[in-house]
Amino acid sequence: MVDDSYAGATPGDILDGGIFGYDRFDTLTQGILVVADGGTVSVKPGTYPENVVIEKNVTLDGASGVANDVVINPPGAATPGIFVGNGSYTVTISDLSVTDAFNGIKSQTTAGLTLG
Image (cartoon, rainbow, N blue to C red; front, top):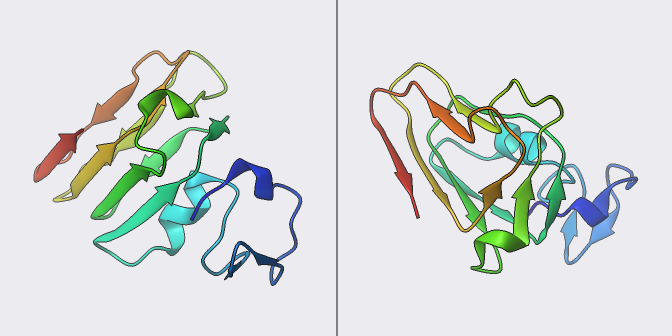
């Protein structure tokens, strides 16, 4: 689970029934790095000021089911908000939005990108 309100937590803190740094994170980047290949990163409503890079099979899912509740707003307008690397990655992105990015989502995957 990713939630921007977890910012400032210390690894090992108990948050919403999970452990920060194990299954609770304050950035999508951290969630993606830790989730198993083919797993799902559930993202709570909030604004995430980061450039998200995906280089594995993964699903990013906005937890509320409303795209405008989860906003990726990358620093620097000349970069994509979400970049899916060059490889055979199967990536699903649903119920989130990207603002103020040169390319909202840029994909080089050869397997598949599903947007929902």
